[in-house]
Amino acid sequence: MAGSLGVSSLVCLLNNGDQGNTETSQSLLGPFWRLHSPKVDNGGSIVRSETPGAPLFVTARVVDEAGNPLPGAEVDIWHASPVGLYENQDPEQADMNLRGKFTTDADGRFWLRSVMMVGYPIPTDGVVGRLLKLQDRHPYRPAHLHALIFKPGFKVLISQVYDPADPHIDSDVQFGVTRALIGNFVRHDAPHPTEGDVGVPWYSLDYVYRMEAGDAVLPRPPIK
Image 1: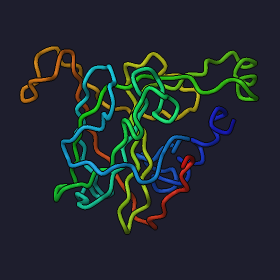
Image 2: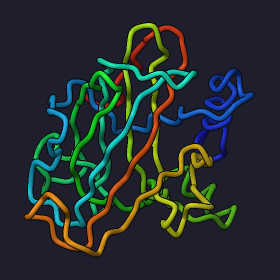
Image 3: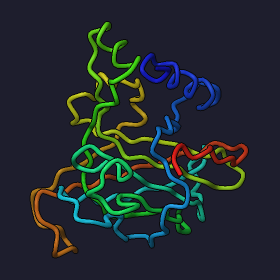
Image 4: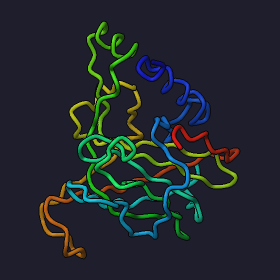
């Protein structure tokens, strides 16, 4: 309910970005982060079972507030499948499907392959569902890519990067979308220049994550 009233996002914004004075890459953790996701080499895939969907290639940099690269940062990536379910919700997906842990290189970069995600509804079978109905609001979250980035000397960065083409980008039920968190998911209708097994269309995302100095304290995982 705190999320659906905008309180969670408000608290997040007030406690990051120089206490709410500047934009921030920080966002909501959500209920689906898992500790100890499998380590993946840069350039590797996080698709661990048959997952239909358009291929997605992500390249990203992790930098400090001055724009300096942060090498050696641990980056957890996870997202919902093209049917709108996380792997622990869906018996058709392999354990840890669409999850992986990467390490930034000397330039603060990491890169990976996955599939395009879609938006999905939050549960509406309880109090929150009744609240949304009374407010005449839909229950949908726009498509997004999760990241949790750990680097000693910096506040743990919990982020979500949103697809601006999603029909609910302007009305996220959890009020999580900010301009700083909108990614440029580019559609490509020509063959991939290096990956011969990639059909069309395929998508690419290039994004910069900015970390603030502080204590590196991991949150408690919502699920085991």
